Amino acid sequence: MTDDELDEDVIDTDNDTNPADDMMSKDAVIEADRYQHNASKPMSKIEMPETQTSMTDATINHVPASVTGIEEADTPKFDGDTSRANPYFIPLLPKPIHRHESDRQLIMDTETTGLDPLKGDRIIEVGIVEMIGRKFTGEKLHVYINPQRGMDDEVIRIHGISEAFLTDKPTFDQVAQSLYDFMDGAEIIAHNATFDMNFLNMEFAKVGMNDFAERVQVTDSLVMAKQQYPGQKNT
Image (cartoon, rainbow, N blue to C red):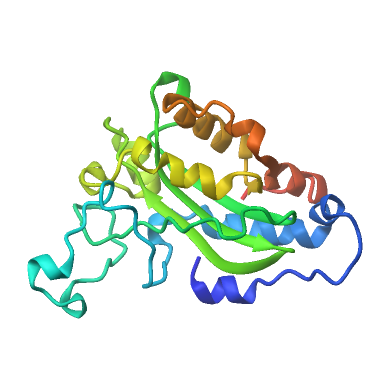
């Protein structure tokens, strides 16, 4: 999803109904489904803003221009190519400046090495856009993750993210706290949310964060879409 699409997809909030009822409205289903239609394309193809918030020095493989002597303007920008080794992607891991807002919603999607977290599959990408009062705030989180394991060629063909691309990316334990803090207390909106939540719960449990599921509210836009548009395809 491009920044222009995020700016255009502003959700109307001029009503006094309960936020939970709002999310069940037809407009909310259309917005969530529209996002997921775009998110169903590999997130590696999503155009991300040039200004990015990086991880701490301890968790990001990034050499400052002051050390290399190369001006930042001369540093190649990330071109979105995840099919090969590509060191120019800088993770977006913003501070949760709206963390305690009561009407905070996060539209979230993940990519993984496979379908089953119980058989060793891992998360390799997380993408989130934030809404407050059903309006996009401009805050986004986007990170690729080294799963420390291989992937089948069929899986790589689906999401387009190669093992070579992930080699120099942070491992989940290096970004876990940033991910947890950003999602803590929010309503998570995801298409087929059970899939994403099973993987997130597994990953957080591996690093001792066992209460993640209790810290968020989950809305499955796939369930909502099926209720509003019975018989239609899932995407």
